[in-house]
Image (cartoon, rainbow, N blue to C red):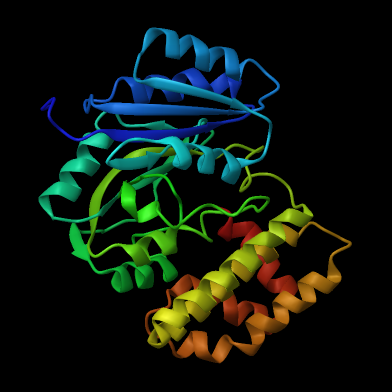
Length: 322
């Protein structure tokens, strides 16, 4: 790796991940791309995460540690964005693991295609099972509009902050919304807006560890309704820029409601929310079925829900979770 390569900053928010933190940090400090600034944001973690961060900083001069009061994932990422010095920036969640050549892969992908953002695939890891996020994806370079359309359809691009490398200037007017879950949904598309070219890679270089205590894996709570708020806000903003993506926006709004409905499945005191979500999906089923770019799984789910919620729930419990 050429030592003249530009500085890349890796921002890592850290909170209550003591059993997983060393594994994550080892995968970052041992990157084949050496010209790194690694910013660890100890977000008031009550365990030994802060001590571990300081220990790594003592042994690696590329590491900077910020200790702060707990403010949530958005707050931690924003602190990193306010102080980083790299020409490019990437994010890693502190309970995940990255391939040792992830930054090199993303930088080469970006540089070779004269792009300002590069994206790699990721694998999802739960217990002893692993699966790749997207299949049959080709290397390609796309415009922001094409990339956002892919994001809305879950077509090789997702909303996550991680598994991406960004030109630093793209964040000049972008920050993560504090106090919200699913903050990536409210932010990633805005960074895409600011780019000219986005390079999409077909190799999985990021391992997303799905734990029961993670936002996705944990049981339902009121804050998970943020998914609908963040998705609808994204939809409105996308339509302001690309009004012809209305079908793709609707698909994403329906998808978010199915995701929330599945989270609500075991709740006996959320009838109002369930009824509202079911009505939205039913009211838009025709548009979903007529959209040739919507996947079969979405269409089958819409048909089942229109037939009977209990039938939909039965099929989801038996097949969908797998």
